[in-house]
Amino acid sequence: MSHLEPTVYIQDTCLHCHRQIDWMEQEGYAFVTKEVSNPEHREEFFQQGGTGTPLTVVINSDGVATAVQGFQPKKLERMLKENI
Image 1 (tube, rainbow, N blue to C red):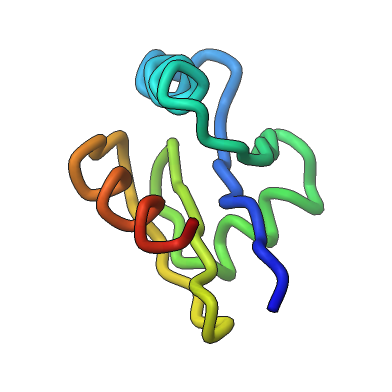
Image 2 (image 1 turned 30 degrees about the vertical axis):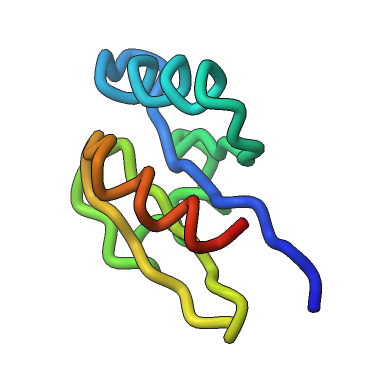
């Protein structure tokens, strides 16, 4: 079973995106960022149900993707700890 890093869809000008990235780095979580200004990333963002940024997609050990809309540190922490 391989561990997949969460994907965080962001915008350069999004304050909450930068707060979430800073928080995830401080907490030691590995993650991938994708800028929604990139057409390919924007399409993925909408496919995941994105309506605003940040949008974080966490894939659990069963391969099920869960999306978290906005910067929700308590919810993210719970999901990311379960995914370690």
